[in-house]
Amino acid sequence: MTEPLKIAVAGLGTVGAGTVKLLADQADLIEQRCGRRITVTAVSARDRSKDRGVDLSGVQWFADPVALAAEADADVVVELIGGAAGAAKATVETAIGRGRHVVTANKALVAHHGTALALAAEERHRTLAFEAAVAGGIPIIKGLREGLAANRTSEVHGILNGTCNYILTEMRTTGREFAEVLAEAQQLGYAEADPSFDIDGIDAAHKLAILTSVAFGCAVDFASVYVEGIRHVAATDLAFAEELGYRIKLLGIARLTPAGVEQRVHPCMVPKDAPIAAVDGVFNAVVAQTDFADRVWLVGRGAGAGPTASAVVADLVDIARGCAAPTFGVPAARLARLEPSPMEGRQGAYYVRLSVADRPGVIADIAAAMRDHDVSMESFLQRGRASSPGEAVPVVLTTHETVEASMRRALAAIAEQRAVLEPPRMIRIEQF
Ligand code: NAP
Ligand code: HSE
Image 1 (tube, rainbow, N blue to C red):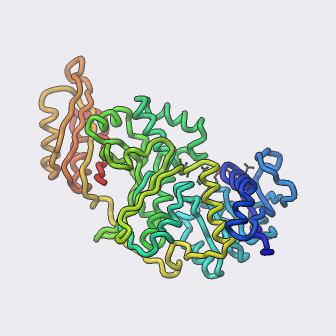
Image 2 (cartoon, helix red, strand yellow; image 1 turned 180 degrees about the vertical axis):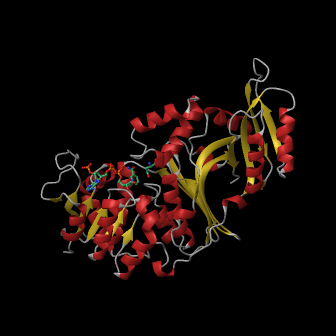
Image 3 (tube, rainbow, N blue to C red; image 1 turned 120 degrees about the vertical axis):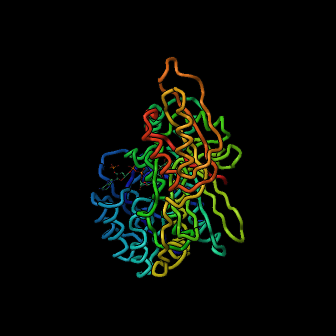
């Protein structure tokens, strides 16, 4: 009889308790699939008295996750605490230092320290696995690293944050404003403990930095990700987008360009008939453009106990079977150091919303600023009139393809005009 794989779980919240539950519910199936059982021998969390809804009898309790990583009777430490520093980082470093495999769902930790942790694990011939860190239940890490190992990937993009996708979907379908829908997302438990990580795009940027590394075989470079969240997207933008034939999505986009690696997270207008436009609510989607397999699409639930535990346990099954791939698809010591491509070089079309005083000549001045900065306008929309002269009205314009640096200069000039009453709001248009 093969020995069970012994695991110690640090963190018993949504994902930790979900993982322990999945391992119990699917114990026989998992044993069949890996030829051995996966047994939880130790756990750690802050509050021992909390009911986690799982049976922890016979399991050793550690008040300190770092002590668990150092002392537990376990082959694998599963880190499900969260955060790029503190207890999570110390737990993972200690586990690797003690020669244990590590499985984590912690995108912040991998985005900030992934390359160094992978080097440390690979030096000791141990696995560092993080399928659950990107897009929850969607097997995108394995898909890129193993399923597409014979391809060069030139682009990967996707909806990487379920909270933002839920908020944008609700704003579009109900006409409600951002703050009201965010409060609802928090009540429903979709948002991270600190919701600014979701709505300011940081969570999606963590995931994108990891995807970039696996897709292009380069060191994780979170600091080079351009990040913009969805705080400034208004219900009126979603309505205008609909009228113009677009949907607004918070996308993460990584591309190999002649100028280097582009990594960006920001709200995008995508054509209504693009497949990604139809991915609504808390669902995530990831699209990879490859040379031999062409375009590969994965859609699924990016968060929640079940989907995330499914990804954590998939990594455990690999370890139990003795399957090991380099952490980011290429041995960590040979990951490329690629130049970041500056955001100012982004080429594409733009949507701009302005709040202007409703009086003659205002539109001509806006058009002149666009002309002066080499930005060609495609369409212009003004809906309604102010009830008295000089009162604010929203106007919207879209541009032909232009370079981001020109667009920024044009918007800076427009913002200076006396008739422009609020900072211009700009959303990039992406054609997929
Ligand atoms: P969570 O519900 O807040 O759970 C965190 C767990 O860590 C809790 O059990 C907490 O203990 C424990 N903990 C926190 N600080 C600790 C410390 N210093 N020592 C020991 N235990 C500590 O978080 P989660 O949603 O499960 O997320 C866990 C990780 O998975 C994060 O990295 C997150 O980004 C990632 N993730 C989450 C999801 C999701 O859908 N939730 C999806 C993908 C990835 P107590 O319970 O006693 O407070
Ligand atoms: N807060 C994240 C989201 C959880 O909304 O997608 C999963 O990483």
